[in-house]
Image 1 (cartoon, helix red, strand yellow):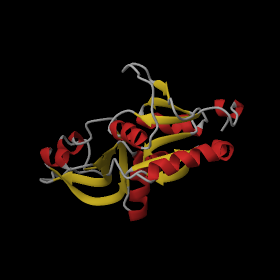
Image 2 (cartoon, one colour):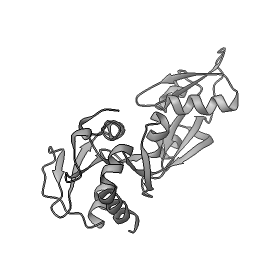
Image 3 (cartoon, helix red, strand yellow):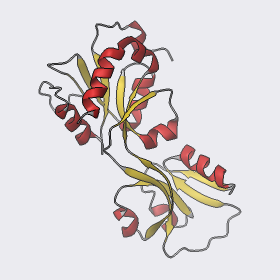
Length: 214
């Protein structure tokens, strides 16, 4: 894919996209532990340069990390495996960073109500993952794409099951849901744009090494 990165050269700073949300604190922690230091920034400032390494950090929405890296606005990024499986971007997976661990699961109510439907309804924020999983089972389902409050869908008749990521499982329990089946385990991944990796592989390999020897 074309992008800003095609005009960059080997002497430019490496850019890393760091996700807001649940992976943010651990992402910052791994950068600090790897010995990369950044200038002070305000909470509203969404980009900052390292002071001791040719690296710039961009803070973006978790889903946007993939876009920034795939379109060459960033060389590398930190993103959950759940989003990689959902969007299937053309990116190199450099390392499993080992934090942000969670599971993609199918869940349903403990006291399941019976609704007459021609096919089972499944609510999810991950429609591609859900479609791929149920296609392998051979069971026909209707996928309902939601952007939040997934746990409410089966409790109020919108869906029979949900496909979502769970960490401790506490939210499921509090909403009287239980895990029917685990689809896959997820954790934070360090990814790179394939083209920019070829150009800047030495610097990117150095960053990867710093991240993975912790």
